Length: 195
Image 1 (tube, rainbow, N blue to C red):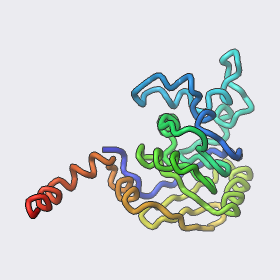
Image 2: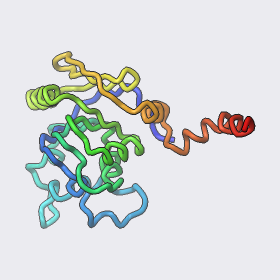
Image 3: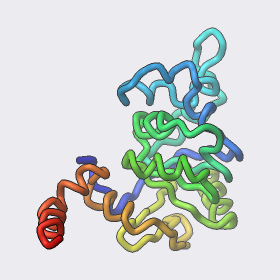
């Protein structure tokens, strides 16, 4: 069982870069581990730290001005290889949702399989979010998964987003694929007995 995702209101961390691939999210040299622990420490590692392993003061996660449970990213987030570790790193850091105008399909599925909600918004809405956060780091977003809406609380503007109904059900109920099957065990057994 994972944490249920219903309605999330939070401040955001802006990352207005396009084409962020999974190797930038979690560099390949950190993929030796087979459990999810510790990946958040290496999220965006090569951007967060210099070659001497000192924090880069120019990178948003090191500045302390923007915090929250929502990462707002540029277009084409999560492209590149199919590593599930990218979702592990983002959730391990503490994010519960990522907002972008486009996600790579494999990254999107890996995210939902690991309790991270990818929210696709229009390019115009994404631009507005970046502007709102830049104007005030205290800007909050409300993501309502049951109604499939996202609201910029600074402007009141709201958009709907699409999500696979099965994945939505899993996220709302805090289930992974195995939990979902176990929750429906009696239905499966009844169906098999009828056959």
